Amino acid sequence: MKYSILLVVHNHCDLTKLCLNSIRKYSPAGNYELLILDNASSDGTRDFLREQVDFNNVRIFFNETNQGFMSPMNFLASKAIGDYLVILNNDLQVCPDWLEKMEYCFDREVKVALVGLAQNCGEIGPDGNGIPVKNQLEYIEASCMMLPRAIMQKHGLFDDKYYYFGYYEDSDLSLRLRERGYMISTIGLPIVHRRASTMNNLTIDIDGIRARNSILFCKRWADYLKRRTFEKKVLFRRFSAIGDVIMATAIIEAYKERFPFARITFATSTPWVFENNPHVEKIINLETDLLNLENYDEFHDLDFAYERRPEMNVIEAYAATVGIELNGHLPRLYTAKANGRDSKLAVIHAEPIPGWPGRNAPRNSFIIAAKNLIQRGFHIVEVGKIGIIPDAEYRKTSFPELCALIASASIFVGHDSAPFHVAQTYGVPAVIPFGAVKPEYRTYSNKVFPVIAENVKCLGCHHLQDAPRITQTCQRPKPICMTGITGALMEHGIAQALEEK
Image (tube, rainbow, N blue to C red):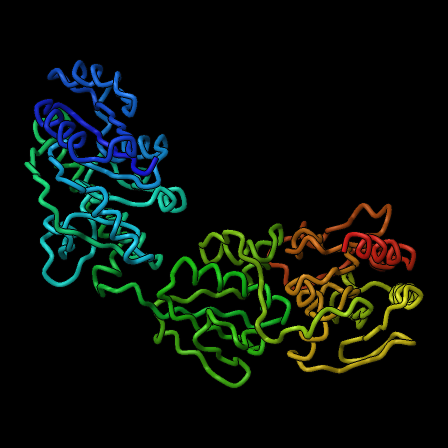
């Protein structure tokens, strides 16, 4: 089925008959379905519609009260099976080849998401009301519009949770889609629009509904109505540390997908994390440069974002701070590419993390892990500021060199620190000891194999203490969650990683 034609009707049975006759006369037989919802009509419309159920391509629905336009139309859209949804008022009479000609607009330009009639209003006045187009096409009037059903499934149709009954729903839909990078288009067709004013003569407060929706629309789209563009300068800041900044790359990609016209600047003390990142227009080094917030339309401060939400995954805490959905986006680095994967290369980072006793496993456990890997035929490369593993090749690397090295390895063993996040980003199996910090709050890859001490009841204590959690302390004389990480546990983690790799 190619087309699903959707009508919501309330009285005006004479116009509904003319509309249906024109649809049947000018639409491709066998290639469309007709879904009609009656909104408690009282003029014989219901009896007429019951007569239409004998047609194979017609489905009729009835409301016992008048529910307006938005919710009923959303309901019909959820029942549709056509590739394209066609929203139509019953006071229109269509013309020959109307569906095929509207569909052609999508074939002509792949970014088009909505098609309507050129003769309808398509520009938004300063008060939010629709007016004839003089300067630019800004919205598609819902009296006659077509959109791919896939677009509706991904982005929804009318926002009946924000607006109510009718008015401004079509302007809002058009702006929501345009804000996401889609285009809208119109076509001139000799379709007769009788403008029956179906909203008049109702017992509900239509003027009040119109005024309420107008206020909501102008509030939601105030910035657009002022500037008439979706372009905006957006600043993100995460001062440090490298691993935390790496995790912020997921937010940047999700934000750019949601707001493709955003011009993003990221400010950090580790600017190399964003080298070659296609979603960032400018990188500010906070070690050398100052910020001027007046240069930006939006500012999202990720400093202390997850520190104030210690019970959340870091990336989810970032998303909550920004107010954006991740939609599956994960951290990604564009700093370096691996020159192939070396099946016998293992990278280890055993250097202790200052100030985090609950994240530092004993040095001996890493030594045993390295010996296990050597016995398996692996070449061991240790990274960090210092080398502490005997029989390992130590390399002090730049960040791009670190990325290239880890990306080419077959396994990574180390603390919950920056090299671990590099390994996650490049999909390298990682064996990581966890104690005071819960792995589910620091991981985002299914190739992480946590090593956890046995019989320690206070695991994950970092997330149970009051926010903000800036440092990590242990209430015991020594962090048994880490001192309990044995070489045998590390070997078991390595075996799991290599088995599932």
